[in-house]
Image (cartoon, rainbow, N blue to C red):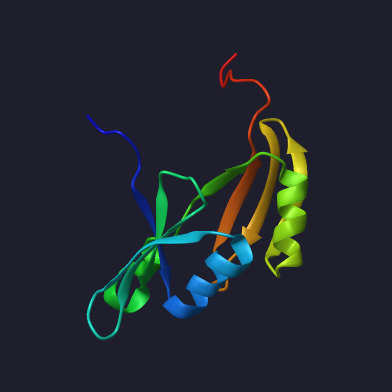
Length: 129
């Protein structure tokens, strides 16, 4: 039986730039950093305490990377505070936190121009009415 989502890949031109962005600006930690040869490494990162990780994967090793755009949404306790903290560390937001029918939501960009959702954890445990 599947227990969790282990990783989701993000394809980047420069693993070092991506590593600095996710670690220094977003606040993730490195979970695995393994050599994949002279040109690349297997780099897993996650928010502190999270079970699932993103893999910062080099575009040079995946010829169809353009068809594999990430579509990820991250959850936080307080979207206003998270937005403020990330913006202070230089993270660019295309959409600031806004109340939408499904809850508070924002969108930020990585150095590659990929978009990521940021949502506030719903106040009630019920996800269905």
